[in-house]
Length: 292
Image 1: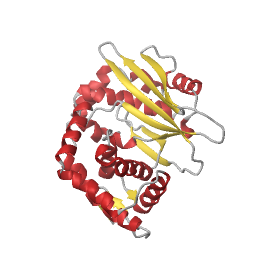
Image 2: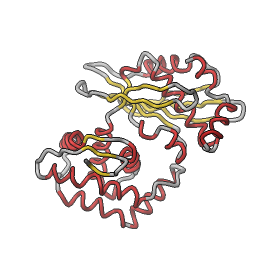
Image 3: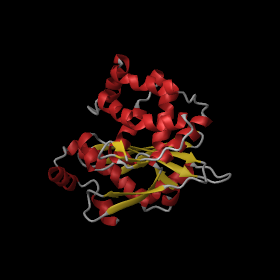
Image 4: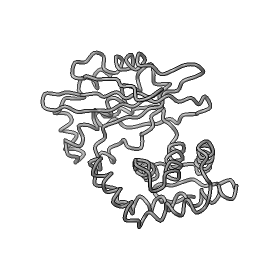
C-alpha cells in the first residue's frame, strides 16, 4: 500500500502508463487519482460499510472514452446510527495519511448526504476529485463484490463492496419514467447505458427492484409510459438535451441513438412482465446486448 501511496502522483509513472495504454496523459491523470482513492478506501476500516455506486464508470476501457473525477458511495447505517462529518474526517485521515499533496473539504449536502471535494497536487498539475457519501438504511441489502485491476500497479486488484447494479438500473429507470421529458439530470440514461454495455444482470432482480422502487414512489405502471420514453430516440428536444448534457460533462459520446437502442433491447421484456404480473426470467448478456 505504501508504494502505491507514494507513487500515485509521480507523473513519470502515469506518463509511462499513458504511453503503454495509448490514453492521453490529461485523460489518465484524474482517473489515476480516482483509482488511488478507491484503493485506499477499500483498505480502510470503513470498507465493510461502504458500497460503491458508480463502479461501472471505472476501468481502462472507460478511461479511453472519458475522464473519471468522482466516486459515489452508499454508507450502510443501522437503527439510530447516522453518517457524520467526524466519521468522514476519520476516513480521510486513513486514506491520505496526512499527505501534504492533498487538500480536502467536507460539505453536507442534505441530511445523511455528504460531498468531499479533494484537490490532488503535483509539481505541474492539480486534479479535483469528488467523493460522495449517502446514508443507506436497508439492513436487508446484500452488496455485491467488485474487483478492478489497479492499472498503476501490476498484479494488484482492488477489491470492494458495491451497490448492486440491478438496483442502480432500477432506480434510474424509475427516475426516467417519473420525470419523462422533464428530467433535468440525464446521468440516469448514461449510468444505465454504462451498466448495460459491460455488466451481466439478473433480469428477475431488476424486475423486483423496479416494482419495489416504483411502488414506493407511487409510479403508474402502464404500458404507454415506457413506449413514450422509447420514442424519445427520435425526439429532437431530447437529442438536444443529451448533446447539452455531454457538453457540460466534457464528453463526446455515447450517441443518443446508441443509448436509446440499448434501452429498447433491455426494458420492454422486463416491463411487459411487470404489467402482466409475471415473473421475468432472463440474464442480460452485455456482449450480446440481449437477454438469454
